[in-house]
Length: 457
Image 1 (tube, rainbow, N blue to C red):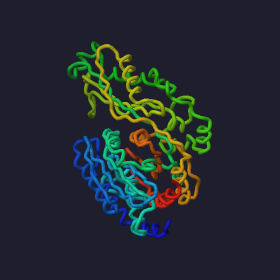
Image 2: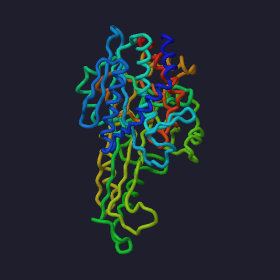
Image 3: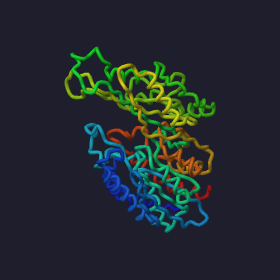
Image 4: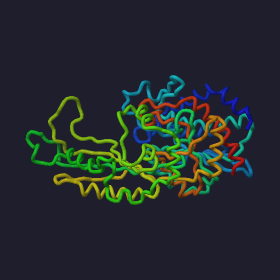
């Protein structure tokens, strides 16, 4: 690799950060209809940037939801073709009062860039753009062929992307898919994620009387929807942290001795999580370590529960309805559709008399695991180690990127998950940020990676 590439990145660092701040200023919240125009604006920003860095074919494809941005450069004859995936949409910013600076006015404090999307995933997408631009500017060409697929619906489960991928298999054909939307193990310790959990989400709506009622006049004579909902939610899990939905664990494979040994060798203690998270103790499924619970065991969590009077003080109301949002993180062989059916049956069997309950499906995605001895993954390992000068760990991710499983099933190519975030960067939470140490080292790593990949495939 030409050292001029790294010199270019260093000399243009401030310019690049200013450009990234422009990208982060776009409130591209895919889940809120009032931000539809902002999501389109972010798509257009990505398309313009792809053109500016040297992509020769750039297209903004409309879908039934938010746009997909595509770009390509295919002039490296006889060299591997890489499909780079990322997303330009972001999570909502609530609760706003917990942010120390406005979420869409990027602010640098203590060499950390604070803004919604800084780490997940605008900052990491931006790094790919600037690295390829640096290579173009300094060498006039690229060591590999490149295709970009940047979507605007990842934060709502990528509902329209699988169809786009299915209908555009030839356009998206490649030798390997590279995604930077995951985290390193911790500061200074790079990690390649070789597996992700899947996801399914439901909403439970419990309805009682036709309107809110005075609790003094009617309390005790009818079922309270909140009480009914609390009972249903509480029935999902026992005191040992085990999920009690019948059939939930039927297809869950046991952890292999090799994986168990690999996780133990990382030396991550519960105390490190306690200190990081500010909790008095860890909790989870009995019989498994914290890493095992996070990476290779399925979960069921309550993400939101609401009903009745929410204002200050008290209002003696018996609510007409109550609601809960539930998500499950799934492991390989668990089918999201089957799990949703099991959840629906469980809710029905635990619904008390006096209320009606409806269960509706949110986003879903299958789990994904790939062999980590693949040449593309080993090339990523070497690139990390050139820059961070420590061994690269191989991990499984507790989170979900629903499109990864779709890529695996539709395009049938290996997926390399080489992210540069850190676990404590508050993605999806107030004060999301990106450590600029990894902004710099990450671009250096990617610069090495494309040349390592050229020699590996």
